[in-house]
Image 1 (cartoon, helix red, strand yellow):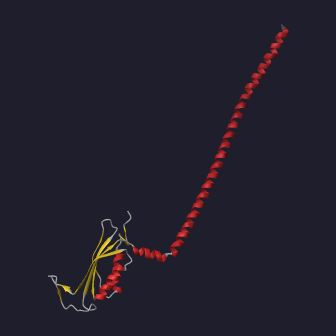
Image 2: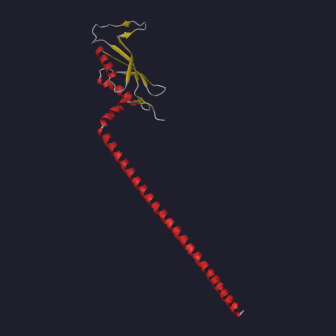
Image 3: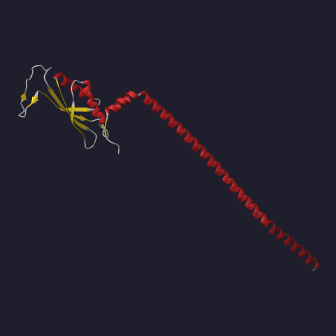
Length: 207
């Protein structure tokens, strides 16, 4: 009996020691688990920072490359414009802007300088779509001057359709008959030329 009791006492002592060790190791286990979790989080966060840093670097490189390409294209456009200034000026003169028809009127008035006649604009109007312009113009002079006047109109830099041209000699009376001395020579006398113009090279306003 005593021998059995001693064996049981030893076994109980071992169980108590195991329980004490288990309870003592639990905090260490949780601390180790916490440290592992913190380390894992730190590793994941470091990886995220590394990825974000690379993305920021790639984005910066992409932006820099885009700006460089844009600057290169801008320089090419400027160089192209500088090399074609005369062509661009001629192209700009080809159009009448519906928002500003004053340059067109000024060019029509310049005909007075290049010709010995005095042209008169009786009407100027834009179409409803503002993509064409109608004008009525007339001038007085000799036959040669009237003819040159028509040629000057056809030589305008715009896309112009000349229609309803009327050429008359002398002055018309109320009954419609000619009065005055009509000379046989086409070089002399007073000729009246009138024409209706349709300018099709009109740029509508931007909305």
